[in-house]
Amino acid sequence: MTRSQAVLITGCSSGIGRATALNLVKRGLPVWATARRPETLDALADAGCRVLPLDTTTSSPGSPRSRRWRPSTARSAPLVNNAGYAQGGPLEEVSMDLVRRQFETNVFGTLRMCQLVLPAMRAAGGGRIVTMGSAAA
Image (tube, rainbow, N blue to C red; front, side, top):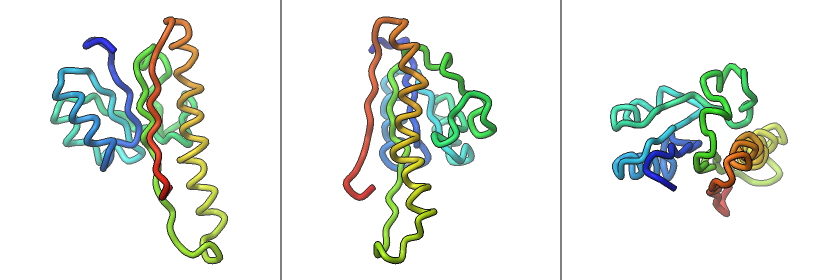
């Protein structure tokens, strides 16, 4: 990764995504910090990150929640797949709708982000994808 390569990070509204974005921008790297709720990204914008609304479950180009982000934005930039959450509760009480929503974010959203950036990475002859996860999720 070179100092001129922008890093695209999903799930920057809090936690590891926010900390990663702040750490990288403080090191002088250009950072695209994204979150489903862009109003959570103000501190990252103030720190020097470029911020974008991005819902990984609807990350197709032209989707209303990701209208300013395009795969060409990232080019062959490193992708940090961080968007995700844990759904707790007794198995017999968690609705299938909640389970599906969690899979849309934690599994299918991560896969979709990879699918969107891989063609540009392949054309550039390389790239990096880091995917975060947790046993709780």
